[in-house]
Length: 340
Image (cartoon, rainbow, N blue to C red):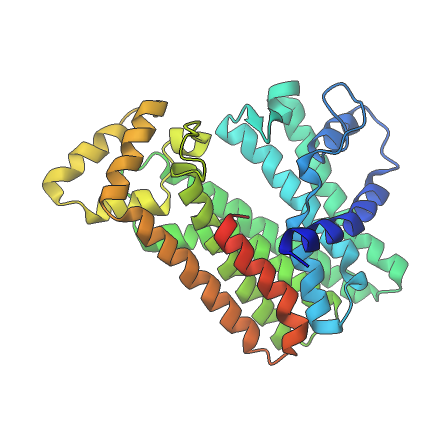
């Protein structure tokens, strides 16, 4: 079975869980929630958008399967991390001023930033309610509380990382170590929690849960670097619709490496672009060309692969059966190569 087929099958399983958490919500606010989750279009008509592919949920379920031999026990956790990802996306779209995502308007563009914040906060609450459904599976109260704490700690770390990321946009230069710390908080924390929750709900010992968390953090960092690459150099070379992150002068790894690789006398050429309030598409195209000449693209590709390799090594060190880890490792390699 191919990785996309695996993700699609697991997405169908978690879809029922997601809807079961949100089904009692009938207030008008939930039209916005349903739109973000891919269940409705802008008019409120039923839809099944691309958001229906739940890759984070797949990571959580495969982590549980690696530990327990089955993934059903992690379904509430898988739904919770998907809700958290949607919460993060709604707020991130507002912060970045992103008008469209995945071929349709974002929540804030359709309903305004104030209502988007309401919708994002509601989705965050649904994530916690999803974990509370573990009680329906006779999971002990103390285990439910620990799962909630894991999710809350990771969400808090994400917010810390997002704060750093927004702050760094206005700095001319950022060190690679600073960037990696930010990415560990922003992207690493959530995927680390995703794998750790799967292992925890599968009954793993504390040392295994910790190893899954660390492996997930490495993967989260790798996938963020991969997104940085795709923002500057899309797979379709003719697609010149640069992301809002690029136009808003986000200090991605290729940009940081480019500044570091330039001789002091030549930094001004690249720096002049980043003194602008925002980049124009032509600016972004020229920046990407400069960075490629400096080897920034290759450097980021090598960093992505190295982080994925380190994550897979951490999974191997758990000494769990290889066949149990196979699906999780296949998904990790696929997302490292194709994007998360």
